[in-house]
Image (tube, rainbow, N blue to C red; front, side):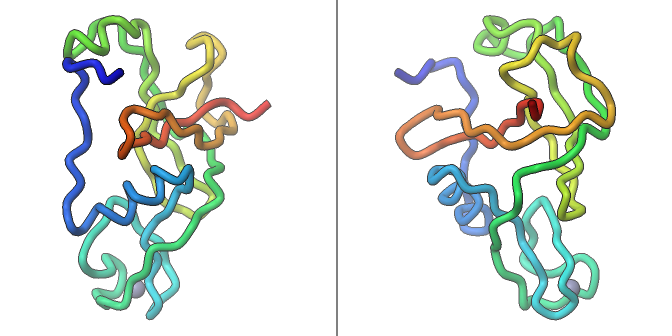
Length: 136
Ligand SMILES: [Zn+2]
């Protein structure tokens, strides 16, 4: 089932909550109990106020394309089979920014400012990748 050429995430103690939630089709981000702000990627402290009182919370999974690129050359054999594919920087409505593929879309339909929502791509029994698709 799993393509041996596919690079997979390697969860760490810090990132395991993110991957566990994704495996349940939930997108979570760290939120600071001290200042109430969100952050991504995961860190052991709040990057805004340096508090270590941070918690994982569900986010809406909705956002806007900040920028994107269409790849016509692949970095590995697995992605070569997916060409062309879109890599986007997405601004989540909670105010954090993340990088993901835009899936289930013709690359010519993408645009800066377009609305997207998270779409989980099942990869293994333990890993589902948060990707995004255009809101319809
Ligand atoms: Zn904080």
